[in-house]
Length: 242
Image 1 (tube, rainbow, N blue to C red):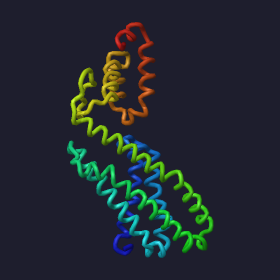
Image 2 (image 1 turned 90 degrees about the vertical axis):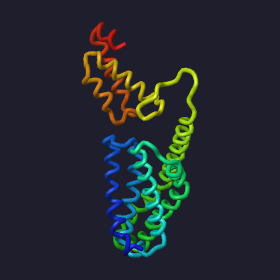
Image 3 (image 1 turned 90 degrees about the horizontal axis):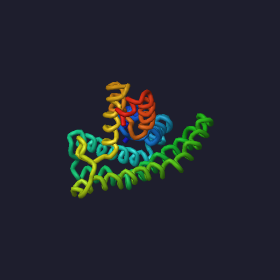
Image 4 (image 1 turned 180 degrees about the horizontal axis):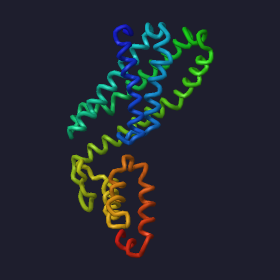
């Protein structure tokens, strides 16, 4: 298997380092810690075990990681592509938030086995220091693996709830619909704060900082603080921004 997919596997998994950068820059809403853990474990396996140890390249656990990683990414990017088009078919939606129940355990098992094989067949003699480092990194799988699976369970629950809620129009006083068609209180609150900032001392520049914030969920506090600071510059500013 390695002879046929090895080079592609190494290149594609190394390129996933860009996902950490995208998360850091706010281009995607994924938590940096979760993305770093997922991508880091793959980089560790392919460059810290698979590349150096022929025994890893011949071990059956390679099938586990290739199948688990491959299916996960095909479904994930199909989901992203459909999201950009504005509508995700339910089969792709269901696979995106359900396959992890099988693919995460199989992928994690394959990763651990690859490292264990490399440790015994190569690193124990070739580099005892890296052998010890592998032991430490394997220990991180103990809290890290349940954390990643738990994160996906949470995503699944929220996503299914949001998708199902969209089928019935709520009654009574509700949040207005956003451009994406949902009733996000976060988007509404953000627009209200931007509108208030636009009539304050900071004018449109302050409003732009709010509307262009990539990680609003985690960075809104500084904008609220800036809003209060501007409103305290004068009585007129306070009344205008209220």
